[in-house]
Structures are given as C-alpha cells and as structure tokens.
Image 1 (cartoon, rainbow, N blue to C red):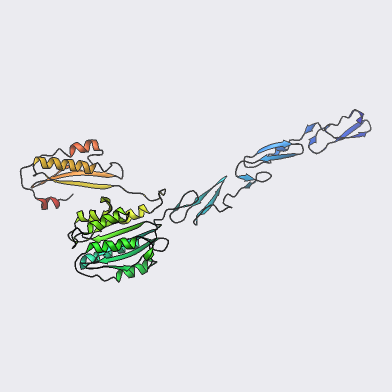
Image 2: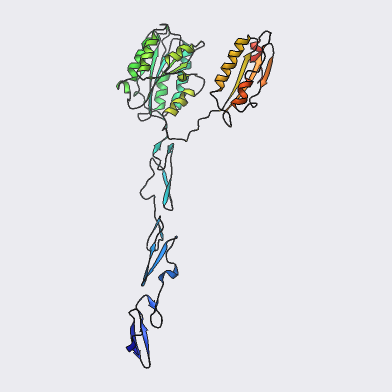
Length: 389
C-alpha cells in the first residue's frame, strides 16, 4: 500500500495488511501528514508580541521593552542606572522615569537647580552703631538662607568708616555656623564714612584669585550704607570704574536717612538697590544663580498698589501725577495672582476713587487715573495716611 507514496511532507509510510499508516515528521499531522501544525495557535508570545509560524517551531517578535523566547521578560531600563545626582529610577514599559532628589531637575536629574555657586562680598558701613547692628541682622538673614561651602556660596566682609578693613576672606569660613560666629564677632569702628577707600578694597578683593575668590563663579559686591559719604562724590569715579569692569554691585539702604540717589550711583543699575526689610536682594541672587532651565521655583508677581493723591495741587501738577501713575501701572500686568491697583484722593477728607478690584486691564485703568477733580482745600496728609484701607 505504500507504493503510491501516500504520506506527505517527508513522512514515513508503514505498510500493513490491506492498509498503511504514516509516521509524520515533527510539525505535521493528519492521515497523510498533510496538515502543518500551527505552533502559534496556542498564543505563546506574550505582552503583545507577534507570532511567526514555521515548521515545528515559532518565533516571537517582541514589542519594544520586552525580550525572551516568548517576550515574557520586561527589560529593566533602570539597569544602567540612568538617574543622576541621587535620583531614583522607576522602570516602565520601554522607558523609565527619574524621581529627582533635592532640587535637581531634568529627564535624568542632570540639572542642578540649587542656587549657586557665587561669591558675595558685603561692604558694611560701620560709622553708626544702630545702623551697623541692622546691617549685621541683614547679613544673618542672607546667610541663613544660603548653602555655605567651597562648592556653594562663599561670603567675605569688609567694614569701613575712617578706614576700610577686610574682616574675613571668601574661603575663611566654610559652613553657616562658623560664618554666623565670624559676623557676630566683628566690631565696628565708629567715625566718618569714607566710601572711596572701601570701594577700592572691594574691587581688589572681588577681582583675581586672592582671598578665596573663584573667577569661574559670579561675584556680588553688596554695599550696606545710607549713601551719605563723608568723601562727597569722590567715590563716584571708583564706583563707575568697578561697574565698567563688570563688578556686580548692589546697594542696600541702611539708616534713618538714606540717599537713594547715591545708592543708585553705587549700584550696577537702578534695579540693584534694595531695602533691608524684605528678601528682594536674596531672591535676586538665588534666581540669577539657578540653572536657567529650572522651573521648580515660581516667581510671584502679585501685588496690591494703592495710589494716594493730594488733589489740592494745581491742575498742571495733577496732570503730571496722572502721567506718573499711568507710567508706573504700565510695568504691571493684571490677572489671577498678578497685580491690582486702586486710587484714593485726599484734601481735608479722603475719597476712595476706585478699589483694587474695579479695573482688571489697562484700557479701563488708564482713563480712571485721570478722572478726579482738583479741590481748593487744605491737604491733611496725616489724616489720609491713617485712613483704614
């Protein structure tokens, strides 16, 4: 019965009495071994892989992120430890995510969003006792909000009165506590205020590599004074020279009577003059020394501004006041978590012209800043300032 070769696909024919049987090679079945077995029918390939059927075998084409004979193994994308700076790696399908530590940011925590490093030189007017103590308080507040160290922020200090003295250099104190102790131990030299000599010493310390100065990092020269120098305008030449050479100079008004004009002259630009009563200078330094691509800090721009206008002034003077208010308002934007502007006028009484919530854009605000009458009356500023907003 096998003479007719009934068995297919390489099967072996076994001749028996009045019949035959086929012994199929692996991968085939049926009476004549005519049917190829589909090894993919059992769905051996896992995790969305594609199965290809061959004779007596199959192969799996894995989707990205899996491996193995049946694509049963999830590839560990974290095995190469891609997350930097102490970040923890979360293995996902065909990708990973980094949970960054501290203030690091980026796909693999590669961006150091910590502010710094920078060198800050405080130039402190020590001619008056009360003002000197206030300057130290300001310094303490700055230092406690910075990371001090050779790879972070470094602080140096100069005091001046009759003479200018380097109290300590940038690399002298490497941690916050020792720096606190050093500042606390500085004794003032009361007397006149010779600013020119102090600026010359500040330029010497802030340039080059002496006194621990690191040329590769930004340097800020912060001058704490009332601006009322004994040497008159002699310091202006020295200040201009430092600014021309690229020294970043900031002025902080310390004292009962502060010359803001002189502080502006001392500083690199008008925006570099600060009050000791807030953290504006600190925030400026932190923002400027952070990675430019970092977005984990939110710069808040919200403010409430009340204009208080003396309407007993002449018409021409009031027109100038209106122009000034419009110009100031142009620097602010309106909206959620931004700025609001109100207007109050006074003579012998106070009138609320419009509240903080009345105007939400410049188009309606600008005309309203001109719509108030001139009043022939006496102006009571003390009463106006005591008005309950």
